[in-house]
Image (cartoon, rainbow, N blue to C red; front, side):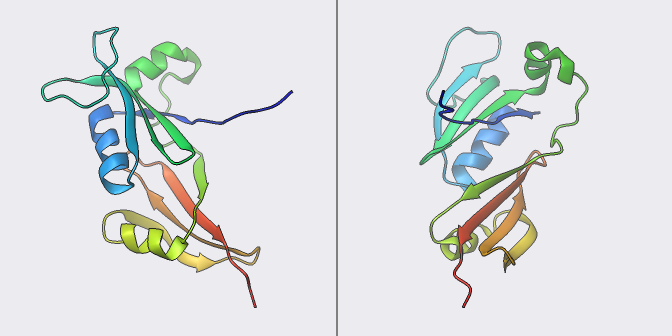
Length: 142
């Protein structure tokens, strides 16, 4: 038995806004997007359309973004859950300083770049929905 991949499915208020955050600010690529009231898949955001679902990726990291009402319909046990959740997402990266410098003026940094006692150099941001995203790189402590 093998676990192959974990892809978070994040409840959001506005799929378009969330896609723009992940693509424009974090450098993800839009893989697919599903228009509201449609059983079709688009591969780009189109003007005038509202969306209920999207998948974005960057390298080996994939994230699904689902509009709150559709999320609650698919997973009724999470009805009335607050967007932002009690979870953080921790992403290993190469060149943490470059990642930090590329984001520091564009996002809400909630924990600044620092080196931990367990040997990781990391920082945390808040995305446009309130989700906490951590970025980290192994750091040799001398």
